[in-house]
Length: 285
Ligand code: NAP
Image (tube, rainbow, N blue to C red; front, top):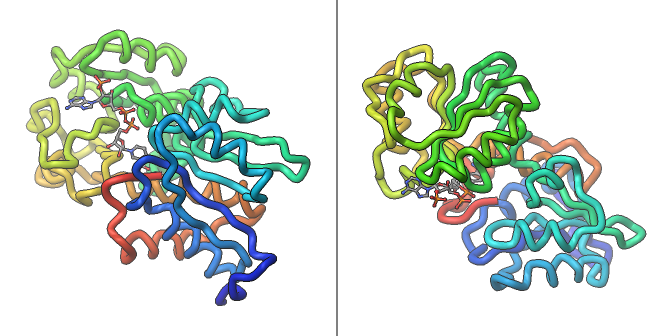
């Protein structure tokens, strides 16, 4: 189904970021509109650091139906919202803002739930699993919050112990630690999640991959390159679930799509857009 031509009635959504030129979001959302024949268009707005709140507050004035928010605006955008979802409130960050018909701005963070949906696509139910999350930044915090809610036992390892402890506190009984003794920690968990940028430029994982077993699941939030050194090491050791961050990228977008259009996202069309579409690196969201 093709969407109607862009006209005066076309609804406008977009993504703000700095940089934003290589965001995968326009490809994802426009593919969804095309698949459903929706009279919407989705564009990338380069918004300089420090102006994210202004951009969000302008949404009702310009009649924008929704914005996705990527670095460095996630916290500023959250502060500009009138209401936040429970996740966004806890994280103090949003990746999705909806302008309601009355002009009120509602913010959500769909990264964590998007991650859990991608994990389930790979056949892994978080409930009762032990998960090591590497990194304690924005993505790690969203993942920890969602995994903890879905019953996973969480260890967060980061090079800054205070950040690891802080992120781990988002999950019931979460444990924060540094990188010392990481090999035995990896050996003791079911799932390893890389939520650091390590691997984007060929960097090896911060533990000895020899400790990986076939029954581990390894998820790298990095998706460019599609096969990071961590995933290559995991595959070489017969790890059955070794997935990159494309699944999370598609699902976080699908949740935003539903919030912006009121329609279930056409996942296959969105997946196809990032599998064959423009190179999504180096930004995300
Ligand atoms: P962030 O807020 O900047 O956090 C990055 C984390 O990685 C911090 O804990 C940081 O530690 C750590 N880190 C950075 N460089 C490191 C290094 N060389 N060695 C060890 N630790 C290092 O970034 P983010 O937004 O959480 O994103 C993290 C990764 O996830 C990025 O690669 C991003 O592209 C990816 N991501 C993917 C998706 C998706 O949909 N697939 C969504 C969001 C993010 P310090 O605090 O000590 O610097």
